[in-house]
Image (cartoon, rainbow, N blue to C red; front, side, top):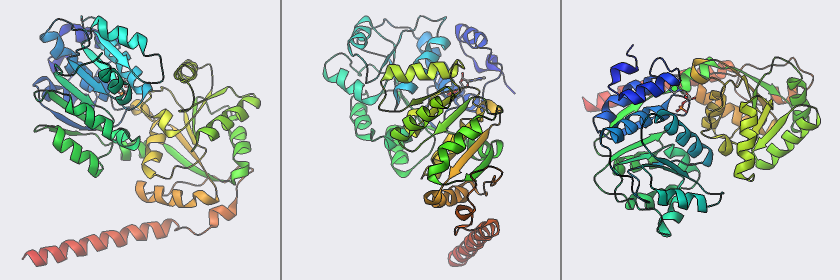
Length: 415
Ligand code: AMP
């Protein structure tokens, strides 16, 4: 396998990579870096955890370093648009560390914090701007940022932008970019609206697809525990008193639920904190920091708050509530299988979540093993009507048969 030195990156970048002790490029880096260095547009289908930030940051820094210009007030040469504040901080931290031996100036702007330091950063001059859409539009309308000299535009986590209702803002930002530029779009999934956006935005792009979903699902040991809504918190405490659970990320459906669960754990002597959209940016970052530093053992999060943030060494993911979208389930459990390591994902399932479980199992193509050896097991929920293993398999066989029949019919017609 090629190491980083075979990728033709500038020496200061290779030094920064070696400072970080990366030895081999990840698949997305191997596939993306060469075409990006040649100036191609890129459509990257990959989620966080695959190394996608370095996949776009390294060639971006290389190109900027090869073609140095004077840093201009409020006129960045590269724009990286991301959906959340956490991802914005993370991407800019990465850029700073990959670019630490280069004279490249990075700034980050996002909402929910004082705008003045961001205005000052813009007026000092910036090469690479990492931004969330709303705050960027504010700064553009106030005349602090102009996008007409952008050479590279990167739209990260496009599907999340869509989920969070940012697509109109993103489209407004795109109208302010110059036509001649390099454009990269990353998305974990490709719903129709994103492929339409990609078709309009990208010029003859290279397509790089990294699909960790299936492998992630296989790597993570999953289990489901049937429990009533009322007993979920007691079950959680019981599980966390088991020393084997180290650093645990707990997902709830609502912000209110995240707070309640964190408080419940705290009262039970388990160091925990919650992150969600109602918390100030500072509180979220503090919680994240103490979790990453191992000062708190459990972080309770909603899907949106946990999106894109990179937390290492999560041993367990607990779905306190099952998500209604199977895709979110795959994202959530992937948080415990980072960088090739496998983890454990435990899901609580109450009466109302039986359908969610069924949809998840259909999507991942397997039945999540049921764990009954706990004091709150509810066999009524377990036995409430749902296709059993055999039925699920036979359903898949039916589908396969139907597909084969359809293909045969089509072939017949074509003939
Ligand atoms: P990302 O998908 O960009 O969020 O990256 C996920 C994690 O992988 C981050 O903690 C990166 O620092 C790390 N990472 C990125 N590239 C490499 C690499 N080539 N070798 C080892 N770790 C990496």
